[in-house]
Image 1 (spheres, rainbow, N blue to C red):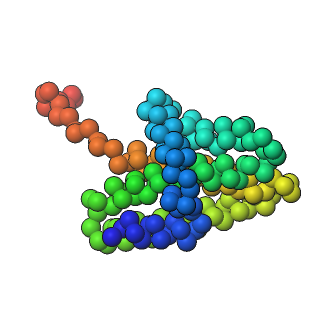
Image 2: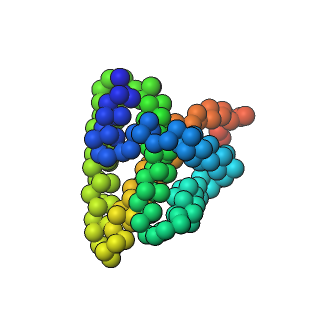
Image 3: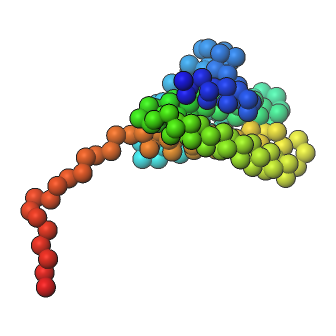
Length: 168
């Protein structure tokens, strides 16, 4: 129930649906991000932008024009991971908590849209769309990592081997 709402929210805020991209490209990008995260467990944020940077570097024409498309391409992978993390986070919540989580996510989406639109508008003409898309990529990826980290099983609390002692 939560996942369809979040997909609608994501589409309402301009996320590119996964099925609208080439499935082989998306699958390769998905695998590249997964491999990067697996290889860099302690430095997962270093994986953000890896696909977009390579994509822009490979652009044979105007790299500045390729920025927005390349950022959106990678954002689709991170947004997919974000939606999966939202779904996992919502599993242990009751209906009221899931509703609050969805409302929080909607507010976050609105904030990010405004923040990145403002950031893009402060850039030189010709750079605005690419910089705005890059901002959205970073924010979505960072949020996905945050939720994935929160969804990891926590180690059980260890009991002390001996009861605590009070020294006077």
